[in-house]
Length: 259
Length: 260
Image (cartoon, rainbow over all chains, first blue to last red; front, side, top):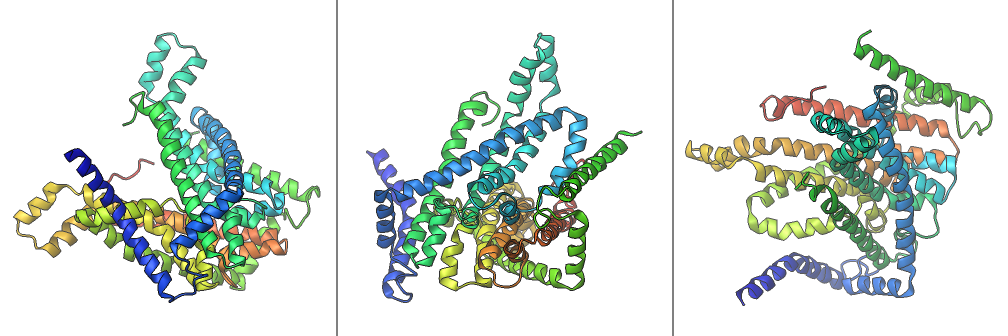
């Protein structure tokens, strides 16, 4: 009994901030201080969200955006991890690539967008390549650090127990570096997600959440915009909390390498 | 040859080889000259833009927008983070909101801010503020909570006033986290300001000039601006934050200097 009460109590407490902010928003919207087209009440935003969901448009926008993210990110994950491992294992590869990577990395990814559009044309190609390019840097750096941080004693122990180079690499090096690699992947995905909406606008793709919110501006559909932003936030949260936390739970946490 | 010299030589060779490959591709005539300008042309454009002051004006506009947004984020994020770390009620109220707003990319707010505030500086400043706010807020919050309780009790026992406790113990104690937050906030706001300028700036700004150059196929202007953006970012990261760290938390012996 007491448990249920305290549970209900904590649910109310968690909802309270949202209720307060929501109420303030509603009051401001209904007071008519701002034109309702620009500052729509929450029920309008919810209605827009429902309308877009029912018509299937939202699903298609979100689907295309996620597809773009996935394509670019897979590219970055494969290339980034490969390059990071090569840099950590071979002095030559490290000396050759580190300066180039260090020159390109500090420039914010979005700044490359016009260049990619110029080189690869408007559309999906440029967007996917840019997403891949942007998310590659954290993956390279973290993989590089992670492989270097694998304890020597683990490698030597595996060697004395007769591990061949392949097993050594797969079961010790890669596994040992995994906490770092996962961090790199997470950072890379977050960076790509942060710029993807603008890239979609600049690349003039016909579908996508970025297009949805920027297209809504033309018609002053603030309710559609806010609904789109809510979906963008929800997907970002899901990628971070569900996808990566699961991945971590399933691997490094289960192996006792991280808590 | 020492190992270090070998590293430097190999690195220089790699950069030279990349430059040579680029130059070769640019001069081969396979690609349009406007899309892949030779390095000398990029350098010439950069020099010309620096000489006539236009590049400096663009950079100044971008920096001004960024610093204003950054100041906004510091003015809100740091006090709120401290309050959240000290008062459970504030934490309970703000944390869910922060968690809900944080995953929204700052650039997604650009169209909304344009509708609300019109094209121009306000949009860029607010987007930067939004981008920089969360890393600052969360790091300050974590920093305040990580201050050793023993230090606070010791200072209290030695008769420190509330104000002294705050300025001499709490703030320095949280400083390593706050500086880490400033760093992260800078990286995010640097992305945000360039992105916002591409969409919302009207006449000046590094983001604007890159995007504008696309319309006229001026790849040389684009690459020259990219070089400037990279240089400024690098300078902030290494010179400003590095110096800040050395002058404060490193000098106080709270964090170790990096080995390299």
